[in-house]
Amino acid sequence: MTDANSVKQYLLGLQASIVAAMEEVDGCSFITDSWERPEGGGGISRVIEEGNVFERGGVNFSHVMGNNLPPSAAASRPELAGRQWEAMGVSLVLHPRNPYAPTVHMNVRFFTTYAEGQDPVWWFGGGMDLTPYYGEEDDAKHFHQTCKDALQGFGDDLYPRFKKWCDEYFYLKHRKEPRGVGGVFFDDYNHQPFEQSFAMMRSVGDAFVKAYRPILERRKDTSYGERERDFQAYRRGRYVEFNLVFDRGTHFGLQSGGRTESILMSMPPIVKWRYNWTPETGSPEARLWTDFLIHREWV
View (cartoon, rainbow, N blue to C red):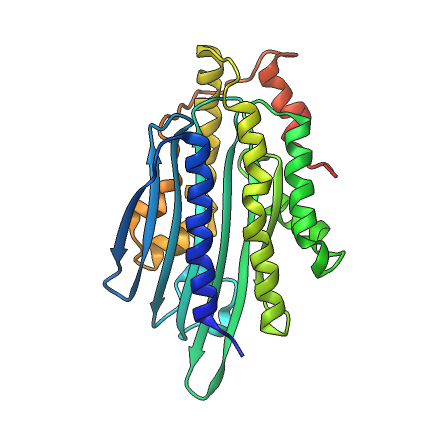
């Protein structure tokens, strides 16, 4: 039997704890913006812009519902088309100003569908991934080790399976390159009993600060110049391309009538595109492609 209220209370607490941890690092406060969705539900957006560390970032909670599954959800579960649905989750993207500090994304969510005379169909989804501009082996290894540790108690197969899923999901097919160094990603996770699946999702959510904060604190004060900022803006373009073209969460939010400001909070504030640009061979920028934008085992 599911317990949606316990999931909601956990997610609200997770949002608050992550915001508190990031405020400690940045020294500036996130603003709070509560909103309601006319079709049902609402959420709380916690956003920071022009902070000491974060150029832009958001940690969002949403709890929305509707009568018919949006196309992005029905495409993967066509047997559930036409059902009532309810979705709740915490989703975050943080864009530090310093090019040596990586962008990070994390999401944990719970989805339920209902139909008269039938049992609810529910599942958990989520994960986290790291997108460096100037890669560091220690950062990638720490991030992946923390993800692996979070999943260890739920089966030895989960980390390699979710790591592979992340590599395949956060991949720009039109560019033939990964978005970053990956992490873990899972969806449609509904192993019985409910409490075990919920515990796995909590473990992933609770691991985020441990995975990201040490990396952020190591890199946020690294000296940089216009060259590094220019390259960061160029690479952020890949982030925009992925979120608008491929990301299921973005598509679901827009198709379900979600709040556009909160959905597009993930977009970086300064972005550049260039025609057919390639980095100089042997440069630190080229090393991102040769050493980091490849599928490899980090731990």
